[in-house]
Image 1 (cartoon, rainbow, N blue to C red):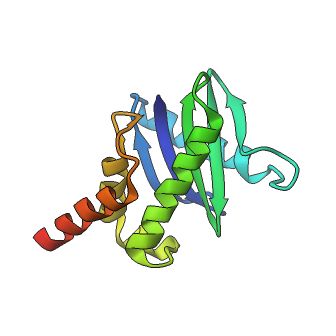
Image 2 (image 1 turned 180 degrees about the vertical axis):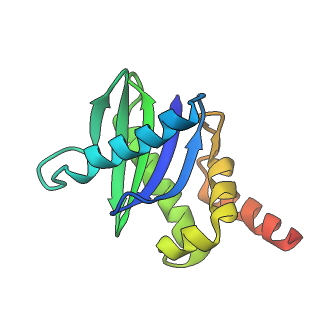
Length: 143
């Protein structure tokens, strides 16, 4: 199960955070800072994109200047989560056309809606790219 998702830039500013288990507000602030500190110091050439953290695993991937970080149960498949991160970025790329950090900032509600289409209650709900894009485009027409 996915416990939370963080998207941060290289400087540690949060661009999106989604929690599927309860955390206090103070705990969320400490958590964001600690996770950024952990993953930003890692060497991507020589270290894997997942690490053990407390009683769970952090699976992350860096695209351009953004870190997409998923905290999952320790029993979850690391490679499946990495593939899910890539799937999420592919959908963002298809929807926004070469997605960048500014797209996440100015279209926060759309990014959140895309994430909600893919992940339901901490579990992967939809894995068909065409289906997700059709639903998001239908939501766009309602605006």
